[in-house]
Picture (tube, rainbow, N blue to C red):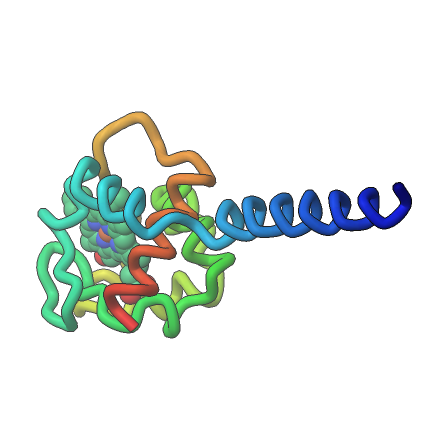
Length: 128
Ligand code: HEC
């Protein structure tokens, strides 16, 4: 009986761990669907090529994950706060450094934290 219990606990722990692991890492397929649905492509290439916004090639290594979450949850607020990483972003195109507002806007409603994690997982896979 004790042996069975140990086995069952081991299986339960593995399952819980792998499910929560997926949730933390984000789902790349869902991320791709959100990228399409929110029309990120209208303004961004997944290459280095600039469009309305910067090319997203390498974005998950040039920016911290914490900053990316903050940015994608609320670009306007993050732009206004102007932390160290936002100051780096402002240099992406001449004339953006002094701008009062970001040009990054997408269809409402705002992204949830889970959607943001999925997007980051997708970007990590496609652009690094
Ligand atoms: C209307 C155009 C537009 C749309 C739509 C848009 N963005 Fe942006 N994005 C920008 C601009 C412009 C910037 C740079 C900030 C600025 O100059 O205002 C930016 C910046 C970014 C950055 C930071 C890039 C870096 O080099 O640090 C990321 C990441 C990003 N956008 C992802 C997304 C994602 C994901 C979506 C879809 C949910 C999206 N954007 C939708 C215009 C857009």
